Length: 151
Image: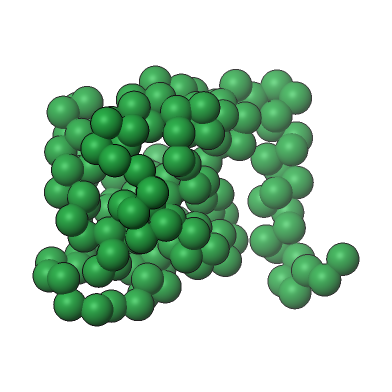
């Protein structure tokens, strides 16, 4: 599997660690920045990763910021992206199995190295179950096509 990874300044310290974890599991990971601790805006890097995932079928994304919240909010603005903020193994596993998430979002200030390793392993082992979940994922995807969805 090919992954695209990016962070903001609050997530850059663990970006190389997360990249290495995915590579150790046999994945190709392309780093889209940033490459220093200078302040940057997370929507810019969420956009870079999401555009690559949407342009390259069968790829996934990894986004990291301080809490993971900003990255997940920005990523989910993209039609076709199902970004999951994962703070533990269970959320990572369910994001893949039930929601067919194609982008994982992590929070550097929320999860330590050990938890991030467990999250990556759970994410990587899980596969979309389909079945009753497929219709729900189709409904999620349809929301993006509605444009301004105000209920």
